[in-house]
Length: 389
Ligand code: HEC
Ligand code: HEC
Image (cartoon, rainbow, N blue to C red; front, side, top):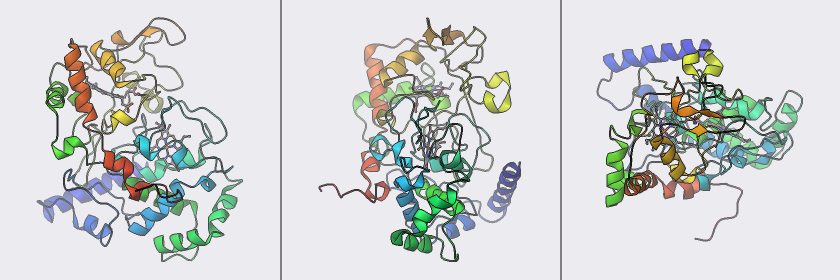
């Protein structure tokens, strides 16, 4: 509730400021101050996105992002020292893990596919399904301290022990001091989250072939198809991030959209598997059954398998799925014809496409792969040996 009020207030302030003080500018004064002196958020000349919003209580600095990078790759940030954020978010896979469903540090299998961390700073809400988780700082407590299921497994019993590992480490003493210079005891879980969020916000991918305007003839045809009324992809995957739930510093009233794209239809009543019914889990409104946030399609070539539960293995199969207008599962626990799910969006109505057209669409999606992003040393494991040049 507090967050909702805060968001409403921020939106109101932003509106007042935008109309009264800075109607033309790309970002407001406050934002400029928050990034003052910071190299952390570098946008490429090619992509040139508008800046993402940054919360007032966690201004982005180089020192915080650098601390966050270390924590992101450090297994000491889990209760039993077995996992780090990287376990499920690997740079070479655009910060996914190549698995349908990951396992937490104590061996529990999660019900959701590890999300790409491509451009998450621009997400209007966090996770595949939750419409009220609107601050990354709030979301990050889930992998750190969540117990259903356990991911990194920090709890009341071991929290001080986990933090002590960093208090005792000389490198972290200086990293925390640089990141939180005003504080006598900076090694707290709240600061860990602030640093992680700062690092994750710097994971901006805007240097793909698409951003450079270097599309093959086939990819150009695929782009036409992507934006056509025949295939309808753009209705849900739109904007510079190819996701419709995108915010920038200029966004006054964030749109948080969720769609059912017809993956399931259990009991012929539109149900999704009970472990993950999408936005319905929060609202209990049947109109939200199976509704998920449209993911960014940037770096999609690298982030297989696909969908919230990793249930589609390849991009080719994703295209077949949309061409069929949903998924018909003939037998087993999840049997049902998703093509006739009553809550499915009208934009997923199926289409005819030649093999060449499907290949063109795939080539367009491949043009969204950002090879500089996955090799950028600023995002890499600081503890790893330097790769050969
Ligand atoms: C055990 C695997 C696992 C670990 C460890 C893990 N994550 Fe995740 N992460 C996931 C999954 C699965 C999701 C999707 C969760 C959902 O939809 O509810 C996710 C979602 C996210 C998101 C939201 C992305 C979006 O687009 O909304 C962020 C940000 C994130 N993780 C960052 C982190 C950070 C930082 C850490 C380390 C503190 C971390 N994760 C540790 C598996 C993991
Ligand atoms: C009605 C809105 C809608 C339309 C139209 C739509 N998508 Fe999606 N797309 C989604 C949603 C929502 C998801 C996530 C669904 C889930 O995980 O349950 C998704 C998931 C995907 C994924 C998997 C992403 C990932 O990270 O796993 C790909 C790839 C994709 N869509 C491509 C396309 C293409 C190509 C088209 C056009 C042929 C298209 N989409 C049309 C809403 C849509």
